[in-house]
Length: 255
Length: 233
View 1 (cartoon, rainbow over the protein chains, first blue to last red):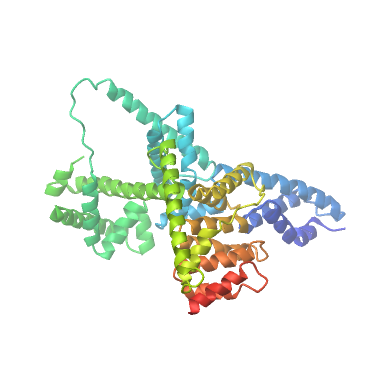
View 2 (view 1 turned 90 degrees about the horizontal axis):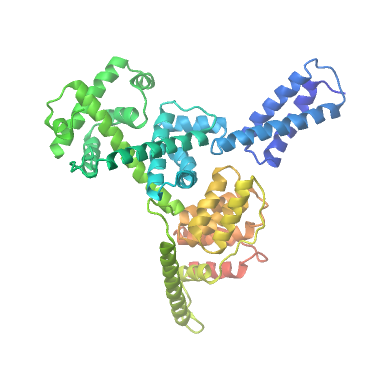
């Protein structure tokens, strides 16, 4: 005879091992699931009276199976990421490391393109571009902390679908006027401008490069940068202004 | 918003400059990302903005056949040059011969994991055995990225990289085999192929250590000894 407290303490390592090996779940996530299972078991037997072991064993088997399935369904909706892995990916992104994000999202790129082609009969190129733009938007939103863990797969495909439909809508509107001889609207930035901007950026000092990178690439706010660098918000704002002026000067000189 | 010429002129207010720089920098970073992701999709998944048509597949097959014929001719030439009675082959030539003469087939009947992972497993095995290494790599990487990869996946992913001359990636994956499963059934094979990958990656000392780890009763022991002799010559 054991109390639920005693049973949980003794059985916890075995539970983790079973979740990890049988369900093929990473150890870190198995521990997390194990904690939820134990918490639910304890609340079910909250009187903490001594009972035969098999009573707890039967109960824990049911709770563990339910929680493991719930976890699997959730990670499936989130490109295989657990909540912790998602938090890790987001914090890496905010620090400028996009490798995990790329690995996860590029793996699902093809299936999103396939979905747009199948569901909306999109051409390959349109589906590819819409998915690419969704990935860019997703990256920015994740950096800005605007995306929450829950159903990333749905959100991502929704974003790609929205991009595609918007593009189609714009296309059909312009087609109405194709017979009129409108001057073609030039893209705002061309490849050459990007290259010159890159060269101008390289000429900046370390301080400016770090600040502009944190602001434009990592999507950190000036407030976040001021907290990270232990400098006042006003000082950061003024420095940013000086940096973008220098950047413009270098860009103009290169032209 | 101001345009690029006004930006260059400098006759703009602070707010306009800020707004324009904001758009310009973000567009540049987006452009950089797009280029990088397009490159990764093309190299790792053979997936481009232009649809992969049957025509390209036929061309690839034709290129493959041409390359295979060229390789066969080269192999005959190597055998004629370095066959019995001729001077001994260099270790680089030996490694190339070992890699080209015998393809290590995947005969695993792997049916674990989620349903779609199971499906990917099948696709990976089929692609690998058909020497469609780009597809095999993409499938194995996906399985591993989903946290469902094991020593078998890393072993065949390593081989896929080895056969496509991506030696660093091959080494990285072969090293995962004993790490994930010290009693893996591919331990002997992994030593031999890891040694070849090291050699092709010019890591001769690491290659030697690995070859020395191949015991007399192990798979490819004779070849390992032959290669060691060639390295020490």
